[in-house]
Image 1 (cartoon, rainbow, N blue to C red):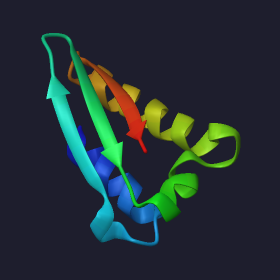
Image 2: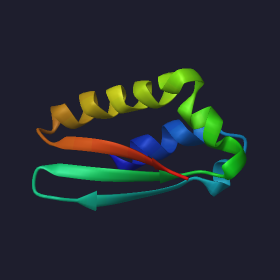
Image 3: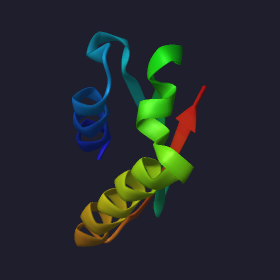
Length: 76
């Protein structure tokens, strides 16, 4: 799941080398923390949060396939 989020974020931003993604794994839920450069934060969030919502939807669909739950946190 972490690689999927990192791939999507790197495709969106101007500084793909600054994308950092960590995963905190629990029994049923994984929390994926995404950090990007300060200049690219708006590109990852999108207008009215639409890009972030789309990334969360894709992550939910992918995690449902492996019978787990994943949550995306975008960290400033």
